Length: 76
Image (cartoon, rainbow, N blue to C red):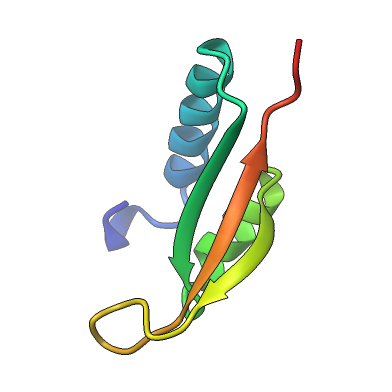
C-alpha cells in the first residue's frame, strides 16, 4: 500500500480478500515473514488470525529480523 493510502483500510481489504480466496480454494495453512520493525503489518496479521510461530535472524538485506507467522484455515 502506498504511504499516502496507509490507514484507509486498503491493506486489510486486500488481506481479507486473499484469505477468502485461499479458503475457497481449500488452503490449509499460510505462512509469511514480516519485519520485526513493521508494527502496522504485525498488528494487521494478528487481527486476521495469524500467529507468531518463529523468528528469522538477519532475514532482510539491511540486517533486520523477521517474524514468521502462520494462518490456519478451518476445515469445512
